[in-house]
Picture: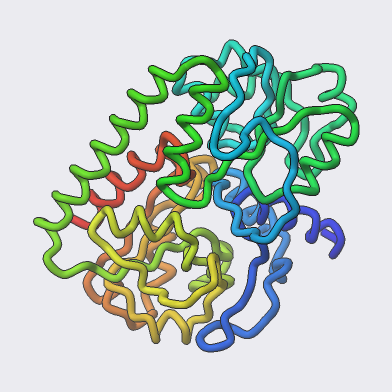
Length: 339
């Protein structure tokens, strides 16, 4: 794969996964630029597969405002009966609200629920097919807030867009409520948000009882699985979303830096000395690699998690995205930490 191709793959993946940029932390990381992955072709394939399965969070600030149906916190009363979603979390929410009949198109990244792929595929995120969208003539195209270039490109050809905030758990609740208004599913959205908040609060209370002392969790979201040990390791950092789910489940992030999704070196992992290592892997890829092989890769890493046998593998059902699945994912993590 040529450098330009790698850059395009990571550009798409990073945005949809919520990374404004993929960076290295000088203090504890490997010190190499991570704007594109320097590894074998197999790792490139894995990097792409991983990212399109759990896209979320945009951490872009200071962007120029793009016209949207929301002004001063109020959602337009306009009825939207033909909509397109470019973001997996938004697609999942639309289905959860029972308004999938209004969804006429999705991006290639919208894999859940599986029926979503039966909708018209309009391309990716950066490469959404504008000609297809113009022909579909949707009332609105939903994207995540922060991608003004994407919105402007679509608005320039007459395609109306609306950005939803998905940078935190609370923002996800608010976006569900906004979609409820726009899709005439206010009662369904209110019920869904109340149910999710109730489950999240119950989880927090159970976690407090179960874990008087929080476990330090290293949440691995990508690495070179062809290597015999942990190489090219990407983890969740200070992203404003994953941290909240880890804490709700009774843990705390072993990484205390400021980067949302850093690439860490072996030395960095040793310094963090996590109590628990969680490998987050999409179900599609788990068919190609056993849990035993994933765990075995850590056998020579001298950290508490390895010594105590606290290495767990989680897939993307429920998905780690800021939407309907996020509570289920936190509940599943709680079960792992309680083992």
